[in-house]
Image (cartoon, rainbow, N blue to C red):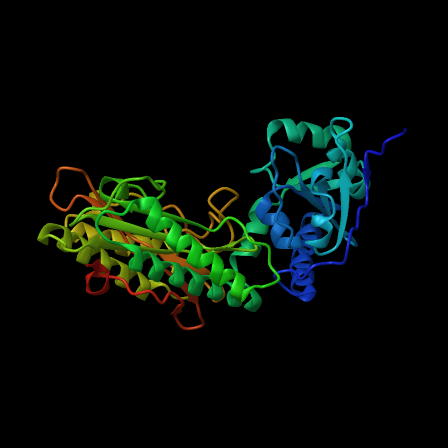
Length: 401
């Protein structure tokens, strides 16, 4: 039996995607503008975030390469045989399935669409050295261009349809936050509280998006010493009276990430902790007021830095003050050009979506020890911003008896 290197397995009808076909066509038109600007014949995208952004298909790699090949006329996802017809059903455009009967069939399938000897755009920040060598071997490009920065710039300004989905994600995160607050009490474990929040969010996503695929929604709920880092995983630590808590809800809807992050206390909050918490809340409110068109990320950062420095708290800041939202996740990418940091000069404009999330970490053994963080999601409008996070922040609501 002669087995093929690739084939088309268009099994079943196309499934409803997160956005209408017109949305994907508009995104592809933007990508083709980038191609024309750089004189490219084809673009080979290999990251989860760009494949999902331009096609709707969010792949599960499991050690296999996946991609999207875009030319002037075609848009084709390339997926592994292990996924059968699901990539075809869940993508905008065509799909080719490659087989694993021999090594590098992925690149043979890519070459079918992109051709050999062409000018090709790639994501240099995603291709490994090994995969870059294989691209050169199979496509023999006449010229290569890194399109990752340009595609990121395109993704940073959201369409109206994206903002509708992100708004829904923020509401789902709120639902998770309320479920977590209801589950907080002395004697329960972090994992028990986290599961309550995750379950509430997944049920809410399924209610709001009955035609979607469901995966990746998660909660990081931290207590006591475990609150010192923003990305500390959940443990079995048991909550105690007076514990500082960090609520972190992360719903994932068709590859789109949203977040809710809050400081809480169990039962009571001591004066030293309250002073740090209230200072961080004030910085949070200042930061929100600064997010408007024309402000640069570095300028906003400098203003909040000054606020903390005046209160002798700047040394306790641990990372930037906010970041973009959209097709991103803790394991498949971010839009690093839109972060509130000293080294980012991007100017805010309407349609961008960004968080405000100051965090202060006080070391164990010091008064007010723990990690304090508030996090809202802001849509930049023509004259300011719209806060789409609803769950309240601050001591008035989040000292939980």
